[in-house]
Amino acid sequence: MSQEAYGARLVGGRYRLADPLREDGAGVVWRARDEVRGHDVAVREVRLPRGAGDAGGGRAAEGVERDAREATRVAHPNAVAVFDVVVEDGRPWLVTELVRGLTLAETLEAEGPLPPHRAARVGAEVLEALRAAHAAGVPHGAVAPGAVLLGNDGRVALTDFGTAPAAGPGGGPGYRAPECGPGGTATPAGDLWSLGALLYAAVEGRPPAGGDATGAAGGSGAQGAGGADGPLSSRGAGGLAPVVGALLRRDPAVRPSAEEAARLLDAAGAGGPARTVRASGHRPGRHGEEGAGRARRPDGDDPAGGAGPDAGRGPGPELTGGPAGGGGGAEVPGRRASVAVSAVGLVVVVVGLVVAGLVYVALR
Image (tube, rainbow, N blue to C red):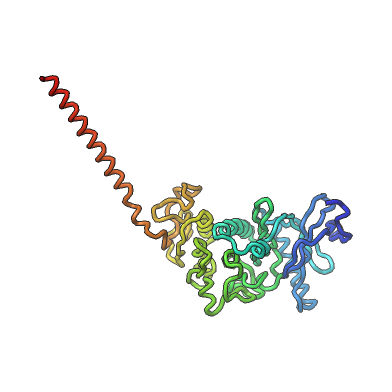
């Protein structure tokens, strides 16, 4: 981009704004030029909640600035890096790396719901970003389709770390965990619920039924959306339905761990069979965590059809269901062995007859 393409606005005496990339409840994201380092970045102009007043707006601005500075600790290929936080005109501006592509929200609007295996792969990469953030002590708090970037190079990257206080309750209708509530504290377990809502939206084109501004599914809609302990009632979710239903459980204590969710998403992304995830009573995995271990078929094969990186790690979580008619295939090895034995016996008989004939001729 030529120097003339950039505007006159200079933020923090360093970042020259160019053109807006997207706009949402948390504000506007601009393409900008870092005039110190000489490369393009993304700069979010944070929009503070309406009606907050001077005191409320100041607290929201402080919350965004604090959370954004903490987000600079998150380093992972699936997480958009936060480079800098600038306070100007009484509000924070977040400077991040520039990922060229569309958001998941824009993709869903243009293409419609994703196939389950593609949604599972996107969700698996978003989960990796969340796991890295949680390890750094930084829950996201605003996981929504608009915060997931699908790069032109195939990269999936989670952005908007630190913007939850500005985006309002939950960062978007239907994507806030019930226990976090309006103005509540973001938690890793809440992020997993939000991931479930994100996956639901990816295959359905909308947030879970019954979601309100806090994302809490209520009434009968909670059952249909998997917000309670029932499975996701979705025709299009396929093998993704059990993990989405498990992530959307209202009780954080019975949601799958991040490790278990990663294994289930890996299986769904590889086209593994649909299963029902048990709410409790999982056998401990290798790492001593409930549900640890890759989801496996009843015959012990890896869902992807190969050994995979987790082969030999012992049994995965106790799951129910599986492919219909699977019991008939168990007899195939026995039938093959019987055929082989019969063939060998026939050969022995034929050879014996030939030898006996030769001996008879020789004696005559």
